Each structure stands twice: as structure tokens, then as C-alpha cells.
Image (tube, rainbow over all chains, first blue to last red; front, side, top):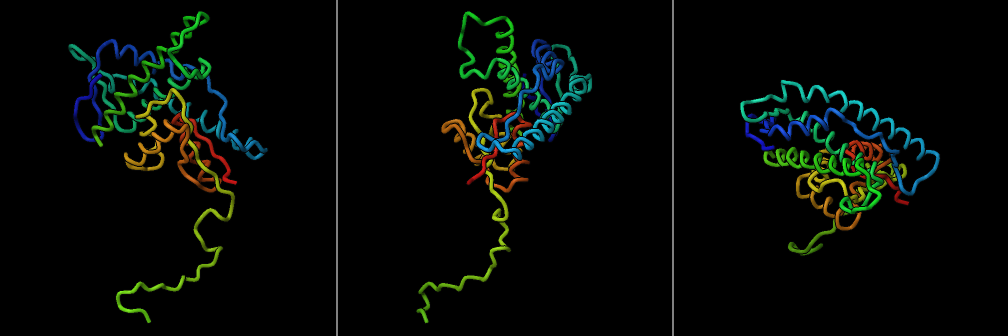
Length: 156
Length: 102
């Protein structure tokens, strides 16, 4: 994945077929993991805090649903176009931000599904194929995040 | 009367306590971002810039504080604004909470 400079506020990336396949898989399966309980405070556990926690969970669910609405849109032919030897991904500033949030939501969601491990590389005899798939998703989503953010830094 | 080059102490303006534009009317909360092993450093910096409108230097300073010290106090605000920031930061999937200052 490599950014091709173009008009201001629009990012154009050149992608290989394998990268497109991975990106389509991640976006197509978004959000991949169920929402985890949200915590608004570590020390405040009163009734008011519990109400605020419920508001936070509602807000996070609404935000996820909003991101979910873009999954088909971002991968349509207007944004992702096959060329002779590669693919071209075109995103506005806002679309890049949405895709970035999706990728990070996948990363954090998969990490939480693994039980919030401190060390992603730790091996255990009890690890299943599902475990390794989640670790792979974390890394692939991180790959796209890096490229999407670097694009922003160049532009800045 | 002081000499021309001597500093002069000006009288303090009379501002009533209840006219101060700060958070003294209600409890104040620290908006804290906690370290985790999954959010990328560049992503955390990006989110701080987006949510707080900080420049790269300030956002990176707080990101490094999170990374090296385990947490960073990003803002101290009244209830509604602190809540707003925590919602925004968690929408970006950062580990953020609001803690009462007293």
C-alpha cells in the first residue's frame, strides 16, 4: 500500500491485490467482535457513575453502527478501482478517518477477544486456530492503520 | 513613589468568586488516558490531535507520557465536558476514563 500524491483533502493509494483482499475481508466483516462493556471511571462507582456508563455504552454502540453503515460504501467501485497491474483506493479526509477508526476498532476488539494480553506474541499450548486468526487480524489492521496515518502526516 | 526603573505593583482587580469562568461551581474531573499494548503510538497521537485540536508536539508529549508512565491527564473539566471527551476518546477505542479530582 503506497500513497500517490494527488489533490488536497483526497488521498489516493496504490494497493496490491493481496492487500485489497485483506482490506475487503476486514471491512466486510466489521465489526468482527462484539462490543465489550465500557467503563467510564476507575474510582467513581456510585449510582450516577453507573448511569453515565450506560450513556457511554449507548454512545459507543451508536458510533459503531454508524461506522458499520460505511462498510459497503468504502469498498465500492468509486473508492476501490482495479487497474492493469494494481488497485487504486481513493478516500476523502472524512472517509480516511472512518476507515482508520474501523481498523482500530478491529484491532482493539480482537485484542479484547483474546483476553487483553500484555504480550501478543506469547505462545501457549492451549492456543487455538481462532487465537492465531485474531492475532493476525490485529497485525493486518495495524498495517492499514500505519499507512492511513502516514498519509495524514505527509499531508499535514 | 518608586523610581522610574523600579517595578510597580498594580492593585488586584476586584473579581467576585462567582464570576470566575472555571470549574469551581461543580466537581472537577481529570480526563485520563491509560496505556495499553494494542493502540499504536502514531494512532494515539492522531486521536489526541483530533479530539483536543492539539499540535503534533503537544499530542506526542501526552502520548509518550501514556506510553512511559502508564497514563496521562489530558484535561481537567466539569462533568459534561469531561464526559464528552471520554466518549470521544472511547469512540476511537482509547482506554480513557474520567476521575473526580477530590
